[in-house]
Amino acid sequence: MTLRRLPLIPTLLVLAAVATMIGLGIWQIARSGEKQAMLARYAAAQGLPEIAFPTIPLTGELPLYRRATGQCSRVVSWNALAGADRGGEPGYSHFASCASGAEGPGMVVDAGWSKDPNAKSSWTGGTVSGMISPDRKARLRLVSGDGLGGLVASAPPSPESIPNNHLFYAAQWFFFAAAAAVIYVLALRKRLKAEGGK
Image (tube, rainbow, N blue to C red; front, side, top):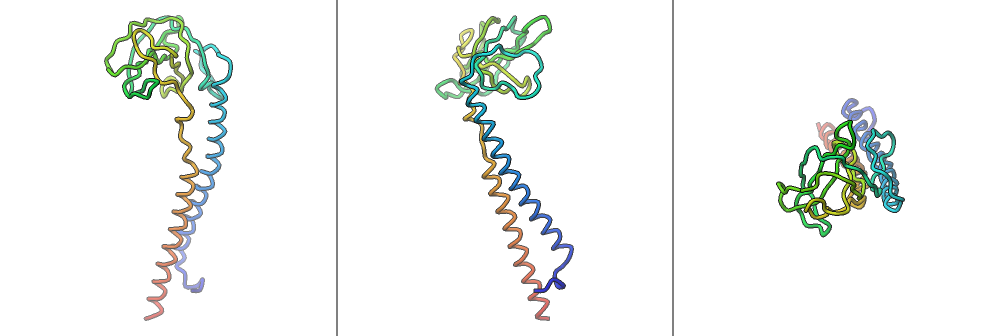
């Protein structure tokens, strides 16, 4: 097999694809290290002193997985999402959107767990202590350490539940790169052999 006999465009496309996949694998390895550092930071945060739950917009690193106390002036609304209690029983966690002052809703509180998605809590607000957890909409929520208003305490947030699959993804990209290269070489050999037999 000589370089002159190689089809230029297909070869360049395959080389570009293989290089891209290798690059993605290397990037996933770097991401794995970053994720591991983040998980270690979250684990350490659980042992830090309690803070006041932040109700103002935050920049930089969020104080996730820290113990905190917040003040819910009044409950503005409720919603429920799939969750679990401390024993791992599946059900629904009930979230209270709270006003933390005159500015309106200022914090989200996981008030507790129930098997019933339509369960009603008698909690109308007050001081609540627990652990800070990520929230898709509000960025942060406070998971109460106790069930509020007749609810059972939800499972506390844990950084151990955050997956770190980046090394697996890296291995996948390297495998894809190797497979693409092998398939192309085999296809090329078959083509060149067929051309040589004419």
